[in-house]
Length: 195
Ligand code: DAT
View 1 (cartoon, helix red, strand yellow):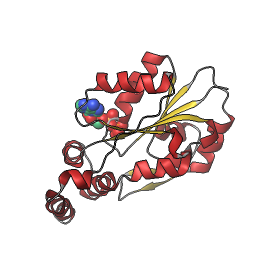
View 2: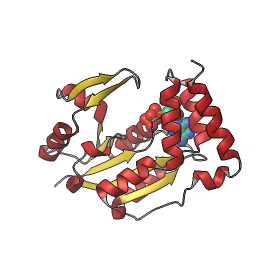
View 3: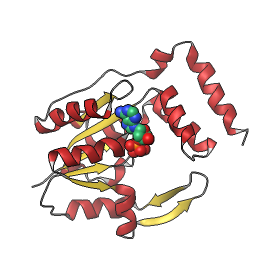
């Protein structure tokens, strides 16, 4: 049975860039869950505030569970509930220093609310926690992408996948930001009210 490799993480951490490069290098199929949902009619609404499609996670999960692909698949998503855990071999969770994430998201055409929400969820490690809950800690590999080039990341992750390695970097942004955390979060929260 061909399995699924999930690349997850807060929007802006570099999932799509890495997942596409990995698919090319390893000769795997690439699936972006947002695009797949559109293609199979699993978009059930639009969240105006977040400027994002609302996905029928059960429909997508069922579709992936029944898929009989000719190759392994790299799935690009932060919506882990849309992936059937029994099909998954490895989950790569990319993490990014929240200050860098804030810069990246500010360069995108993102509403201030969405930026704040994503940065806060990166501080808390929400995608990592969700992944561990959904897939189990054995399958989840957490990587700090902050100081790594795309090439470096692809090299590390290729090894993790092909050799099925256990890998987990100890990441705690609250600890890293220390005394600057409160000031940083206040700055982001304020931006919400100055639209
Ligand atoms: P995501 O799919 O998680 O939303 P992305 O792949 O679209 O993220 O990347 C967001 C931006 O960051 C994009 O302009 C490419 C850049 N980027 C991604 N990974 C990077 C890395 N390791 N080093 C430098 N820039 C990176």
